Image 1 (tube, rainbow, N blue to C red):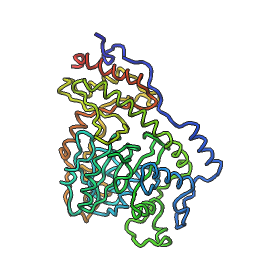
Image 2 (cartoon, helix red, strand yellow):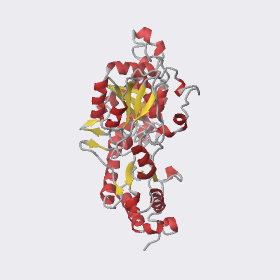
Image 3 (cartoon, rainbow, N blue to C red):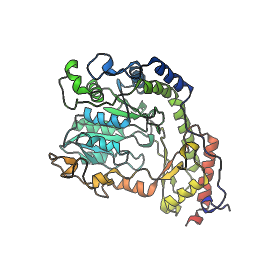
Image 4 (cartoon, rainbow, N blue to C red):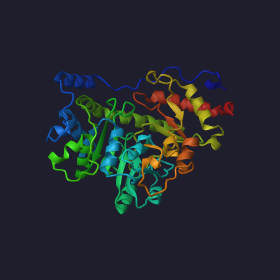
Length: 433
């Protein structure tokens, strides 16, 4: 019986996994063309019927992205975080307004609400796709609720139809954080054309990237205009443009550059292949590992496409009879990482601490220490105590495993080593007890 690598045995694989880098000659050529033009940005922070909306590359990229997802409008921004802030502003969220939000996401999903002095109200998640539970959302609605912020976590779409139904019943806006889900499909439609506003990321860690960047899609003309005003110094624009609704139209500099837009268009051309690679690798691992008792492979709901920002497994401590962290550390010891990840493993336990457990929520301090987030006008009561979202806490503390071995250009031959590592550790798990 082979000894586990974590205990000094020979690992399953010594060859590092391939580097994940798809910035190639196409992006270099596009960037050089912009550099040679000398036009790095053509935004004007005042009203102009063309350049208020940015330069030629920015406007072309927005047209291509809106066509890609099937939305009427796309508004580029300099990050997904900026996009979330702009979306919260476009939803007319203001001091004391509540926004129901997932606790299981990157921190900016919730802090975007606080940027407008709104109050995050955390609702629990579904235990199969890890997105907001519509039943829990419905239970959290009050007279102060203004919007719902949902994340398409790990690349699987949330239950958008049900959330949109709830929003229609209560006159709410649904903001969808799709940072991890470009190209995901929900009931045969692309994510990006389903909710009131959908925000995508072009950060360096995402499926496609321009270093930093983001884009917001919407089918609503009013929301698109407000997003554009918030992106680009709206306070200097509204008079010349003839905008009469001044709520949250003061703006920032959330603008995208011509250089980034040129690179983004080349990256978007590669997205279909990159997604096919992730899905192929994830499907292979799910097929080969699904019969290991206690290792539960991802759910993909009917008429949906999961695009696997990472591949999440659910781990059952009781069935495997070894604690999750110890088991996954043993699998990681059998497999090297990739040169672009330094000493960071490609598989690990847990995702993020539920957001309400972070210090700012526990101490109720964001802007000052007088009242909740510095709001003297909030009439509700918040509860950020441990146990608030038991499903999210249980999944994070004991259950979820992140697998990033599926990154392209990894092939099925690489996935075979991942399967061998899981099977070796599973068969020899008594060493870990």
